[in-house]
Image: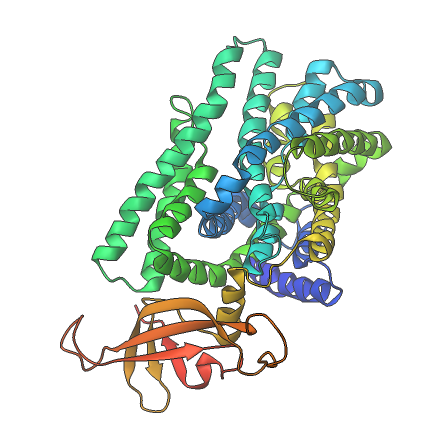
Length: 496
């Protein structure tokens, strides 16, 4: 297993770097590396590693979903609430109907088997979509209309809806009793309970962090532990009370951001560093699940089924965005963002075969082929169109994120040490503000307000010699884009 991890790290990072140099998403390179080193090609990853790959992929997915939750602001969610709900249902229904229309003709399967296949194909991949949306949110792309938040939220709800439909169709095939209305009722119940189950521990964690001044790594590990526990709880309680643990994980981050932005930013920064390794595990192991021989059996007919399903899905996505302020180019971006498939297809593609569905092997082959076709192309399409289409307001709140990243400014609660004097300080206050740009002032003969530039005001408290919180020496600094970087004079302490 140790050798397998070494292969993932070395080849995964190399592929990520190579594809980024080609102006392509690094995750595409990781997926390709996974296919090549997986058990179906070079067999460089041991069976023991593949045996626990599902757990590794789940932990990696939890990391990115926590980061997603820590980026979800209430005002943005309010703006995209209705389209998010519609996009979580309509595109998947359209795709399932498209597959049910074409698959029996080309693959020779029944309409019910086609419905099972459509439900598998109808799930968008959060593993591919969420990291790309988080990257856009970090850089402020699409912030005016909340487009990345719209796609991020809709893709998470889409999976809940489609998986429940999959269980309904599979139950109908098995001849068992399926209460259709009860299953339909599970959809809103699973969503609502998922949010509640995440908000409660998220709020308790916040109170714990506010009462006890834990170091950032401890906070992050505790949040991760609770999130992993919730995904386990979903598996245990599924037969009695269904809830969507993916939404629970995002809800933890949301409530922490809502109640304490400073703590949320610190945890998010630590998760961002953890994501470097988690991303390698997630995409390389997803690629390793792909059996090229099985995908090859789907052939041209399977490709046509996938493309027809995507065509119907695209129509459903575009219809879902009627009545929104998005223009046709932004709607096109949302259509492309809803193409990638990977996580769910890898997880449930083989379930029909194991359940005794006659066409289970064909269903598995098409599911695997959909990963090979849509994950790389969808990721590339999202990256390319996002850079060209998504807006970036000059006065966006994400401007401060860019300033913080570029200058390396710490967050409230972090401890820092002066490189010149060796003294230890704690960041106790921060303010984001727009100030006159002294480097580019507006000339006196021009009308209108002066040119503004973003600035972050930081207040420090001398910790190493102060008698206690609330007493002792403090100092303040203001950072603008023209100032030296924070690491030039300070270093952040990551002690526990």
